[in-house]
Length: 282
Image (tube, rainbow, N blue to C red; front, side, top):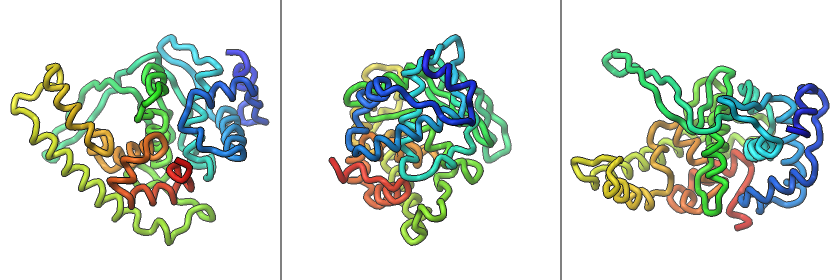
């Protein structure tokens, strides 16, 4: 790294300015930022500089984070708080970038009290209680390609915002003076209704699969992809309300039309929360 190495020794001091050529290159890689006006782009740049000055960003597993990678990640994270405040990332300790998907030990206690543990390969992970955001660079880069509808950076940083009041539950903290209580008071009801409906859609999808379904079987995988293509969100959103919020957030910024068409009330709540309307300039 060049520019960024001069930044890290001054963490928590005056943020270093991102060079203009690096900033323009970053904007060119993120077409969903095209809707921002000049003032918003300037504010986004300032938030990136502040975020990189406040939170360490480093590689793991032998991966080296370049200036371009650091700014690319920070720009997407800053988009969520463009019209809010970086205090929503107070729960974030650092950003760690792996070269590829990484394994995380998972633990779940079922209704019978039996503990289940397994290793799961992930493209991203947001750790609760002041933890870090971990990202797979392979997946981050893949999702910058034209036509991409998913965004692991936005997804994981939405989780960190959701963790502002403790464990992620799909209801992020509201900021006094920035959020209108009258617009957001029915958030739990709106999101719960949409989540239940989406889970029913997933149930119908699974009912359409063959009894011997195997996602490693090419024909089965193609069938699943064809059925999932008609969904307004990635099927992962059905995992729990926290994942529904994170998946809906990435859709809101990157591919908002299907979300707005299927769940207009959710779209309106996200617009009120993030204080942005991606479809207004579409």
